[in-house]
Image (cartoon, rainbow, N blue to C red; front, side, top):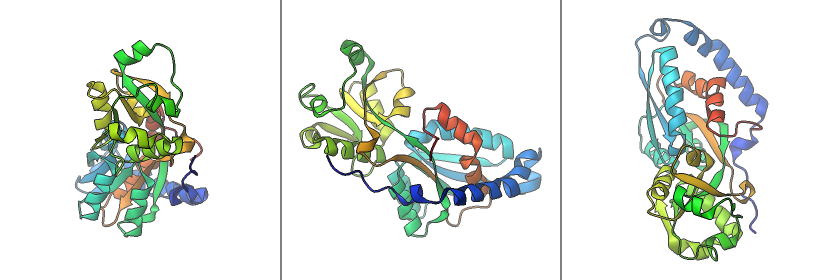
Length: 281
């Protein structure tokens, strides 16, 4: 079994620094905005902010943004995709104001390239990986929960195809590969892996029956009525699947308010309601 990867920098930030920053922004800036019934009087003319969000966050971010728009009068355009794709767009000059990533390494790359400030980045949630199959196949398996061991990928289903987010760059696929390598199953499984452009694309492959199994986030599996969970992927076998939010350099006025909103209790409750872990971050 391989050693657990080193934790990203964001997990090692002093908690009181993040708390102090959030309290300052909310108390001094966001509070007057959300309490004023005429948001445009505070902000000036309404503006459109641009939020890039990992595909696994699309549902919760759309709901969070709808509440933000209602509270402030500002519009936020949500663009979803693989964290890697969005990060590369930012590197190439795409005009995002805030980025929500499902991978710490991509966020740290932006910080290292001075495209985002370290003080403006924080972990707001965590996710878990699960093995899924189409509902009909799951019913055939009955109540027999499958252990996450090498036999699941070799002996039990030796010819089954597996959908993963592309392990070359999609966070969910990268984490899945780490767990499979640690298990000693990656070499046998790799020829049967169907790489997808993002984790939601991997989910759709399983839903449509184009592959027999997949590894996706628990939150993605929960929102589908056409798949069932076969096994849980132990979280100590891969890098933490953290959800990070950060403000992009040269962002528009108002981006710091949106950042504070995404770090705050409303979005935290939304994340928790969708199955994300929000405790002990």
